[in-house]
Length: 139
Image (cartoon, rainbow, N blue to C red; front, side, top):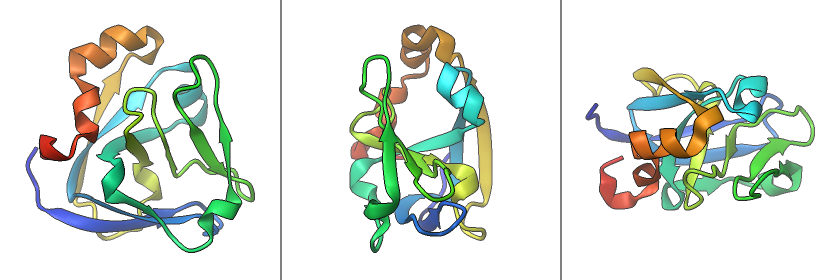
């Protein structure tokens, strides 16, 4: 799904955490059934770390949860509890953006794909998710 790149702003519910990301206007978001994503209902798209910027004093409102391999860093707002972005195990060099936390008006289409996070290694290899955080991958 090719689309033009644009700047998306977003953040958490209480607006203490704010960020800016450069990504296509049309994105593929991943709905995962792993224990963490399924409990949170998180559906996210992945961008290279270089295209993500945490704004203002957002850092002071973030806390992080990690489990299992401790590769993924699940960030969330200390005030409202929303995970508007996190650093995924599949792409430790990238950022997973919760698409519902993008401010209205810049995403024109979201295609949701399902990934079997309960069988993480097989699914990540099948969909080549690791490539999504590479700047030269066209995403």
